[in-house]
Image 1 (cartoon, rainbow, N blue to C red):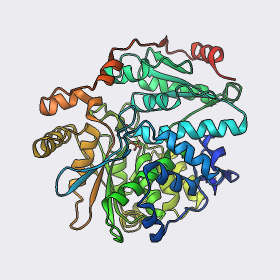
Image 2 (cartoon, protein in one colour):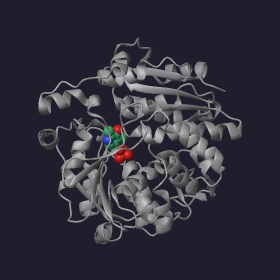
Image 3 (cartoon, helix red, strand yellow):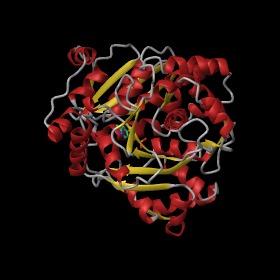
Image 4 (cartoon, rainbow, N blue to C red):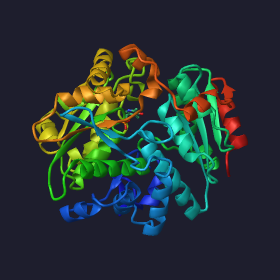
Length: 467
Ligand SMILES: *Cc1c(COP(=O)(O)O)cnc(C)c1O
């Protein structure tokens, strides 16, 4: 299996090489040259597998350049820190079932992909005999999932920028309590956009980037997208009966369109998915797109800080991979859509609107702060179950698309403990922290403080990067 660019300007590359590349050289995103497919017989065979075994099968279709035994070793190691079921399903009422994606070390679904990415990137670097210095900016979940997945690796170090005083106590503790030598938490005197801009400046300096072996593990990374495909298969296998060829629907709390894109891949691979329901918060550029066909990214200033912060996006980095399929894999039409975006601030697929649902099964909705609180409260009253604010956005929008006879699975993207304040506001409950989380909250913290200054950051990386 080879990977090509959505903009048509990249020599086909195998999986392991695509992983280390980030954006394709033409500015596009890597996609499979042909989508692998899975038939009913294979699906039935997969029912007996454990999560790591299923991950080996599904990822094996994408990573054909990795021997099976190596892949099996990596998936076993990736999901070892999880409870035995890895992804448990639980019904909250007659209509909705939650798919538990937040059982990993940082209590959010990003662990599902990052844990595998940590394994496979180290493996790809070993094969190449090289090292990688990850440079990123975070406002919370991505940074902590990346650090927990990459801590202690020999060939990878992490330089993670975060805005001073802008993260929750829990998020700070998750990152800053790590004392591994390869983890550098850089606290910038600025806001998230300042951190992001520093990263862009350094990553945009190609000489510096090459000299320092800089890379990224952001949400466009192919290892992340493919690792996320696995749990759509897992959830379908758990939610349907042997021999049944039942369709199920998934609702996905969405930000950068990474998680739901993996569901879209699963559907294209032949998994019987009826609807992929995109749930947005107040920053609903994607809901707007799937309702109207017009995509109009917002500026940082137009992006609201909400109580489901991991969905606070101004543009959706992975949407280009969907557009590529929408235009029948015609790279020139992808290029012209992004040219429209540059020239006019939006692109327009109104003419294809009916295909969004009929051909691709994607529908969408928006949830607000008030919806979130009401949903957390309603679920708690009905079932005693406490859900996090992002999952609440999913539950709210899922209810609008429940159909008789079609199981509706809502992806639980974080644990409520990460967002204790909103839980308190919704239901007045103080969440209990298990002892290992309390220990983490009390552990000493280690950071490097820095001004919002490119030169200071350059010097720090030069002094500490692996080579
Ligand atoms: C990252 C994140 C999301 C959004 O996922 P995308 O892949 O960016 O669409 C939703 N919920 C939580 C808790 C997250 O951390």
